[in-house]
Image (tube, rainbow, N blue to C red; front, side):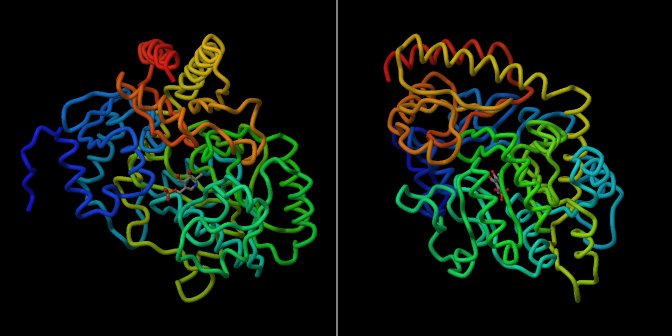
Length: 438
Ligand SMILES: Cc1ncc(COP(=O)(O)O)c(C=O)c1O
């Protein structure tokens, strides 16, 4: 059953072939399977900035697990902390553990909008809990979200992340099998459109449970928020007493230990963090105002139920404590921000040298090349029309030369503390070569 056919295929190809028999699409998610667009690949090691396939091919990793890896793969400080936690037993599932308190205290200290915290294991769980808290608080059902923002896979939010052009403005379900009532209860407007958002909140304020956004939408590469947009959202939601939820699953601890809320000086009522919080370990949290979180402080018979067998698992918490402390002690954000600026500047020069229409977007440790579109994107509509095929060719050419990132043209490159000048020089050198041919 487990034997691999012996042909002159690579081990990666043989494993992916076996995977396709027993795993739908041959990977755990459709997005992961997109890696196969540039050739079947199976990985078995990752260290620092390097990702290694089962055939021993090494890549500089710009995917970084979709963003959690901020310190580098297999960071000693984080892994040792997790190992120590494992030695004490991975899960107690009753009462509390000192580590929970220590990590919660750090989140309260660092994130301006967080007074209390509940842990969970993924970003989707965090946004689910945030919306349930907001619905309980307001007694309302409708959610206002923004086109191009992703908040996880559940029915409450998997709407209008990548809507087709002719469905802009209407809630577009991203999956089959979703509850129509969840979709119907979602209002969508373009990101950065203060007027539209304000009008919706003022008009439907009595029915809206929450306004949720990625403060810097990275699910479509990178859209920078207008300061005035974030401030307007803060003002109108405060006036309507509707919780404002910042989904900082990508931005929190990747861009700053204080989150985008610290960076832009706009404080939400509820905050979701995950990904870089644990440098790859499954750990996430919903935090926010005490009066909102306290709704979940009951005995599971009243108030808001927040539950989860693995919530607050000790290796995840230990990893989070070590990740947060390392980020702060090593000033990781200065390193990755400076490096990100160098990648962006280098890529812009290359596009111009080769006379290629396109743009380089990004913020701090995140960047993306988008072919066939120009100008700074303000919203999801500004991203439509990018040249998908050219990006896939670029990704394939770069992969051949030892640089890995997902060939999905709407996604992004990530940098970690383990990336440095050597990776930058090799990347730009090879990008020069590839861009000469795409
Ligand atoms: C902004 C944002 N929110 C929520 C999620 C969902 O997180 P998870 O995949 O951990 O459920 C993601 C995942 O990519 C995300 O990017």
